[in-house]
Amino acid sequence: MCADRDDEQTAAATQEQQQEEQEQAAAAGILPAEHWVQQAARDAEDDAGDDNDSALGEERASSTASITSTILEYRKIHGRTFHGEVGNAQYWLERFPLSGRTGSSVADLLTLSEGEAMTSSKMTGSHHLLTLSAGDRLHLAPLDKSKLTKALDIGTGTGIWAIDFADENPECEVIGTDISPIQPTWVPPNCKFEIEDCTLDWTFPAGTFDYIHIRFLVGSIKDWPALFKQAYRALKPGGYLESFEVSPKILSDDDTVPETSALGQWGKFFEEGGRKMGRTFRVLDEDLQRTSMEEAGFENITEWNNKAPIGTWPKDPVKREIGEWAQLTLLSDIEGYVLFMANVMSTWSREEIHIYAAQLRREIRSGKLHGYYRQRAVWGRKPLQAQAAEQ
Image (cartoon, rainbow, N blue to C red; front, side):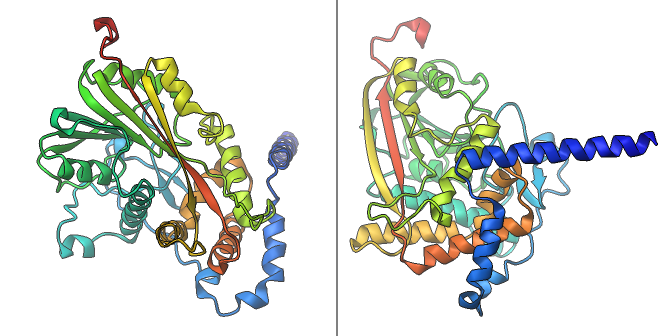
């Protein structure tokens, strides 16, 4: 009798929680999962024969099963692998470890698991996309390369930016940090990687670096001013901090991306998930880069803004190439981008996530929705006259 009553109370509590989540999602302008199910039914005839949308494939297995170290104990959601919760840092994008791979031979590439290869390809595509958007430059801050001796890359991911920057600046020691050891071991002699949670007190001595690079940490940081204060302390006087972030909102200047489209819903989906996690995706909307740099004490703060297209619709050849890379990166594994967020912010099932992802693919491939997302790089200098106590 008591057990039945407990079951009823549990069911009622679960139903109440689901109702609350649905109301919060609706308040954020997020369409219910049923909308995409109905949309899929309406488009079923058009989708006939499209294997990419209907056959979404088997889930990829993680290669970390035999690794027992805490730092390599990644969380799993619906069979997918995400960063483990070590310290306070949390990253929403799916990652697989690449440590132990040299990445320098055909044999290494052939022995990568499907998950490893996808993550490596996805992050490489994102790196190329962001670099190309910035005029094929690894940085926008006005660095004096003749005086550049030590640089730091926060949230280095697979380490591709740090490796490229080290190759470009052979006299500079480049350190990349991340909360997971997913970097290759074959790297330039002036490049190395360390496990560090950037949201905790940094272990680097004050006044260590000439340049600190932070890119694509949107949705991962609880306290942006605290992060930039850490960077300020770690920089030498006259050193530069550069932050490159993006907005998840997909917009259009010709009204081809309505809010009720899958593309139009993309940003809402992530913003609500970020609100639930306490790690905002509204970095650009809230102007967190500039205001956090000002609060930390940086000077000569400069801002660069860009609209990055998604798809092959732009007529300008450079913009079209950027759009092609954005489409390739996004389509490579949409479920990997949204699965963690969907688990955090809603009660959507795995199948419903797949249906939404299929609609998103359909819209991108159609070329009819001229979507873009905003990119912003902000850089500032630590004053030359910074007091020793601040260093």
